[in-house]
Image (cartoon, helix red, strand yellow):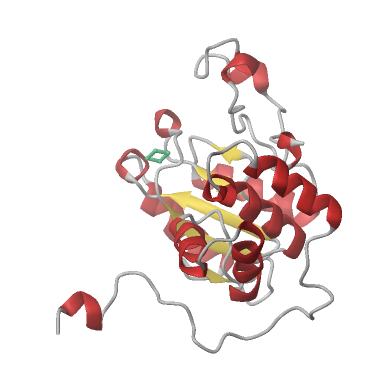
Length: 224
Ligand code: FES
């Protein structure tokens, strides 16, 4: 038997997944269904709306266990395998429960070259959690991420699928963690840039200062 069949590189779905939500909880409301239908109407086929719908589901349920992926598949009339494939491709979709703060540390080429693994190791030691896991206190999930598109200010990490912290150093990490612990606004010097070129006047790199304080709204809200 081929090795990739015995040892698949992607985790296969659990055939007996744990149930997290009751039948009453595991639904989309009429309003949510209308929003999903609106996204579907923008594409030739319903799979075009799968990422929006997964995002909406994650914001609603907090994470995407198999039963939620099945709900999304049913709503879009898609095979479960297709929805599972999309959800498992992106670290931004949470397939299991995460901590209060999800720290995605980029270790792709530029960040790796500029110390991304040092940052990751520093966080592991500081938070007493291994990459890919959630701290015992349940507050921090530490993840290794692929390129997040901010290579010019490596090493960097993303917090809770939102703000970016650029040009990381151990001192800056300390400052960030202190703010998180104190429940204060995060002291980032720069954040995610808007996805819309028009919002940036067509210039996404040099306007970084101009968007200081910009908070990216959840994507599903931006499509209403
Ligand atoms: S390599 Fe880290 S953001 Fe691109």
